[in-house]
Structure formats: C-alpha cells, structure tokens
Length: 136
Image (cartoon, rainbow, N blue to C red; front, side):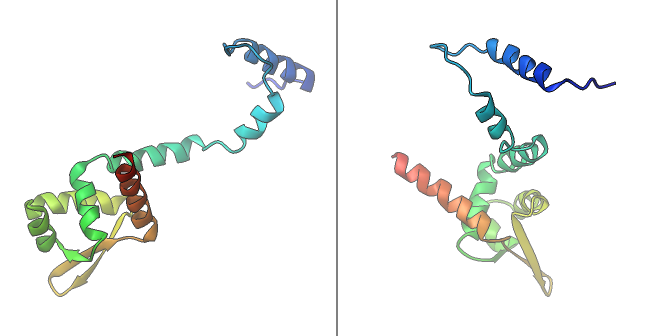
C-alpha cells in the first residue's frame, strides 16, 4: 500500500533528506535543481544495460578484435591469424560481441565475414583510443 504525501509533506520530506547530506562546507541544497537533474539521470534499466556493454568491452581480446574490425571486414580464420589466437577463441569472443550488436556478419559461401555493426561502435573505439593516447 502506498501513501500519497501532500505537497507540504513532500517538501518537508525532501528537506529532511537534504539535512542528512554532509556537504562541506555546509550550504543550502537547491531542491528544484535536484528535481530537474533527476529527470535527466539515466534510468536504472539503461544504466544496467550500459554497464553490461562496458563490461563486455573490459576484455582485452574483444578490444583487439574490435581494433582489427575497425580496419576492415574479415573472416574468423583471418582474424585468428592476425590476432595470433585460435579460431575457436575468436569465434567465442565474436559470439559475445554479436550478442550486444557490436559486430555484424555476412555469409559468403562457407565463410562468415565480420565487421563492426555501425559507426557508433567505431566512434566509441576511436574516442577511447584517442583519449588514452592523449594521456601519455
């Protein structure tokens, strides 16, 4: 059962919550600003999906695969040779990348060719690589 608070009670409740904050030095909290920001914060669902996405990119081999696919479309055997990995290891990583729609594939005869899904993935890859290069 949910209890509906009057607007005065809601304001008092907000004020009580802000009194528990430990800002140093203490200053008045702008409740209106906090409410406005709350409308722009990522939803829990979307933040969870993004965390899964970044977690998937937390694997060095997957990032290496993306770095090759950023250059050109390749089949599994060519990817494996370029990365000095087994074809089964590359296929395993590609399955994970496909699950989050980071890579796409097309079949030509018995071969399957992989490429980055879209420019969003390529832009993200390039932005992170550029950021890391700037840090040095």
